[in-house]
Amino acid sequence: MNTLHVRFVSWWVGLARRTRNVVLIDIICCFIASYLGFALRLTLFLPSVYIDIFLSSTSLFCLIVCCSFAAGGMYSVYWPQASVEEYSRLSRHYVIAALVFSLIGIFWRGLMLPRVSLAILLLSGIILCGTVRASWRFFASGSRAPREGIRTLIVGAGEAGTLLARDLSRNVSDLLPVGYVDDDADKKGKTVAGFPVLGPVDRIGDIIREKDVRVVVIAIPSASGTRIRKIFDSIVPTGVEVRVLPSLREIAGGKVSISRLRKVRLEDLLGREPVRLDLEGIAGVIRGRSVLVTGAGGSIGSEIARQAAQYAPKELILLGHGEQSIYTLIETFSREHIGVPYRPVIADVADPVAMEAVFRLYSPGMVFHAAAHKHVPLMEMNPREAVRVNAGGTLNVARLAGRYGVEKMLLISTDKAVNPTSVMGATKRIAEMILNDVRMEYPKTAYMAVRFGNVLGSRGSVIPKFEDQISSGMPVTVTHPEMRRYFMLIPEAVSLVLQSAALAAGGELFVLDMGDPVRIVDMAEMLIRLHGYEPYRDIPIVFTGIRRGEKLFEELFYDPTRVQTTVHEKIFVSNLGVHSSTQGAVPQRVEDMIAGSERDILRELESLVPEYTPPAPVSAS
Image 1 (cartoon, helix red, strand yellow):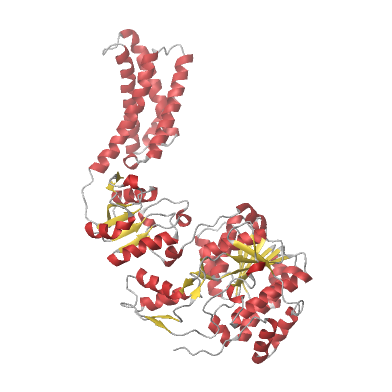
Image 2 (tube, helix red, strand yellow; image 1 turned 180 degrees about the vertical axis):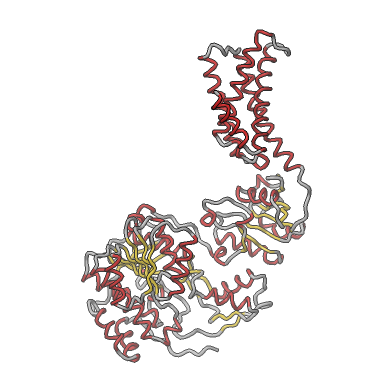
């Protein structure tokens, strides 16, 4: 008994002062509840015959309730900012305590409580414990002095918007909510989390002016890019700053808070619907295997590595030619605590000796081949390098994949491979053709390609160039007012690449649903507005003319009539078949091209890819 007493004293002293106070208040509440149970059933002054029963039942009730609350973590909750979830947990653990106390009362003859007293005691206990805690929150919120801040309007009075409003009002922030706009007619004129719903979204301009708003926060994480763009366009004329809560993908697993707010980005305005994935199917081609990613330092390759790491591979081989990009990737992996083994490798995919050493050492079971030269104008000036890496590198990796028993190899291709007008596009088409020839030689390896267009945020995209021009106050240069391109977000494209790998049996050419093409000039105008400027007035847009090798419009299919759907609505499939005249001859002709002169290379590109139309020289003006 003495030991128990010492342990109890040690536990009590170890509690924080605030926690000890909460425990004492719960004991007082339980005591009052017990007294009410007896007094309301008997008399205000308890008869002496009930004193022993009262003391024993009160002590037991206090002990059981406090133990149940402690077991449920109720004494670690900061009640002045508690949410509905905490009060729900409090109720559950009180019910557990009440059941235990009632069962003891049934089976222990020394605790003979009148049934009416028991009912009053239990009901009074939860009312008192809950009311005391609610009063802390009430007085904490009511005692907060009015503060100055930047008048802020929240778009969306749903769960995310109300959580954000509470966070802004509780914490020290430069933003001061004045209300919401929301299209739900039932919320109009109502107050949510202490702030009024001022009207529908289509009145946002008027409301901004009426309430002297300086910042608008779009708090609809599930909204599509089209919806956010419509809201953004209605805010832009008012000249106020616009911030946004990230999409559901970005905030998954985290709470909605001030720290999540950021400025609107172009991908928010062009965002697409979330991708549905067969997670088990993807895991089936990655789990437990060594996965080789070539071009792992690039935007697509690095995202493939990140997403593949979520499916428990045996290890990731991160291969790239540029040491800085691979170093940046492994620093990111270290910072993000990636839990799978990863091996950084610096090598050129077109170097057969280096690449064979990689396959021999790591024996990959899955290969994602993302390494390529992608810059169209630069490859026009360096056709040999385009052929050496895009075609020769693919040939090298494909042969090694077959020789070393790789289960699947997936090539990242491009929409520029369809009816190409550039050296880069022609060499990527040849890379697709190489897979078709090599798979005949190594039928046990499943070869496939995935073709898609531009991705937002990649190093080779036009967006970083526009960003630099706007930041420098320079005119934004666009090649042609009708230039259009397909765009995807990098995570979406890579998710569909992994899904394609799961669907493939071998010999497929998958094409991703890119949505509708976007005019480059429209993107330039959106970017200028995102920086707080007005296109053509503050930042001019200059049309420089189409560069050599570029097309006004990109295509995704050679023959749309031969394209089939798959079980995934955003993935289409054709086959890697090529012209009968080149069947089986592509690998040798690629090797001859690399050894030939530049003139021979250009002539052979036209021969190998009949659809290739070399561009006439175009001067930038």
